[in-house]
Image (cartoon, rainbow, N blue to C red):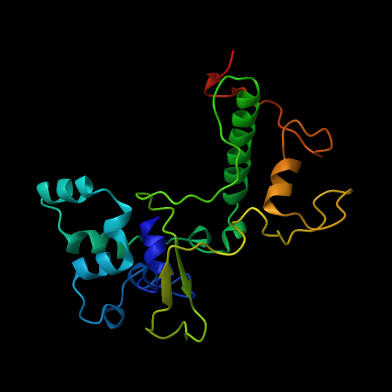
Amino acid sequence: LFAKYLWRQGFIHVPDYCSSDTPSSECSTHCPSEVLDGMTATEVLNISGAFSLLEDTYWTTMEDYGFSDEEMLSALCSIGHPGEMFSSAAPYDPIFWPLHGTAERFMGLMRVSHARGITSFSETWGYYHNTYNPSDTHTMCDWSGIDTDSFDRPTCTGDTSCSGHKEDDTLPFEGLWSGQDGLYTNAEFYVFTSPFNEELPYMYDSLEYWEGCGEIIS
């Protein structure tokens, strides 16, 4: 996840295209020296926000095992072939669809369990940023006017979130079901996808039983 964050900030570059005979070494992620511009690994990790995304004990433990910032940055820059899931084109990856369906099914299980009083689950809408969470950097980068073929980096600002994440932000999806008469906000879509909504045009065969896990709730 943090490698993806470095990519969004312009540190990591990914080839636009690779033919079948392109050497593997030329068809993988890397952090060009032109982008690093003489910065040390520690400076890059600091500027990109790595030190605020992982607890201090993580970095201390890393040092105790003799793993340096240089080795960490090298590993992050060289993650291989990320595929479509690395970008906003993730829906082109077939894995995207069962992944999100599974996430929705888990959410349905939590909503039903909460209604039964089995577990506590806050359904109050909010966008709270965790302090130590590599998947939630609360940073947005503006690529306007940046030539993506250059080594220029975007302007990034912290303590913010992208449009579309808030309760009243409107989703652009149409034709989700035959009775849809307008666009939904996030809050309205959450209500619509409730497992208790009898107008929901689909359902999962079970929320409580998962093959391979057995009975979760008795």
